[in-house]
Amino acid sequence: MVQARIGMGMTEYNNVDGPMYPVYAATLYASKRYGSRNKILAGIDYSYFTAMHAFLRYNEIEVGKEAAQSWEGVIFAGHEFVLGKIGVIAQLGIPFRHSYINKDKTIQKLGYCYYVLQQETGILKELTVNGFIKSNNLEASHLEFGLGMGI
Image (cartoon, rainbow, N blue to C red; front, side, top):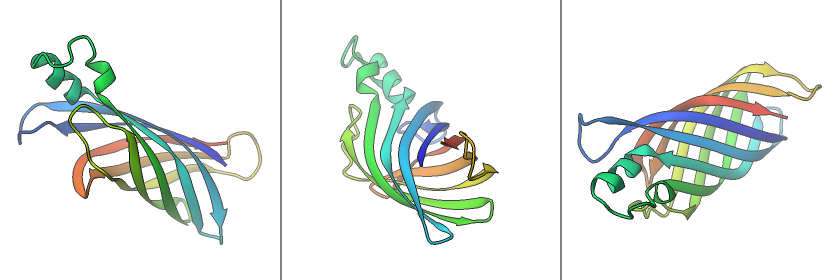
C-alpha cells in the first residue's frame, strides 16, 4: 500500500525557553501488512526547519540560500504494530540530505496513529491522525502531529 503523511511540529533552537519555531514534515512510504497486526514500512521523510532558516538569515550565513540549507531528507525503514484502531510506529532512518548544521548519522521516529478510516475496498483505504517524537542520534528533536492516508 502506498501511504503519505503530512505534519507539523514545534521546536526550540539551542536555548531553553527560547522562541518556538515550526517544523514542517512530509513522508511518502510503502507498507506491507504481515500477520494480522504488523506492518513493515519503507520510504522517504522530508523535514523543513524554520529555526535553521532563521539562524542562517540572522547570522548572514549562506545568504540567499537559507531555504535550501534548512531541509533534511531521510530514507527509512520501520515497523507498525496495529491493535484495533491504534498503531504504534517505530522508524529508523539514514539522512541522504542534511540541514546546514545537523550532521547526525541516524534519525529515529517513535509514535502512534489513530485510524479514523480502515477499509479494504475503495481508493482511500486508510486515514490516520498521527503523533511522533523525532530524534537525531537518540536526542529528541521535536514533537510532530499530522494526518496520514493510504491508497
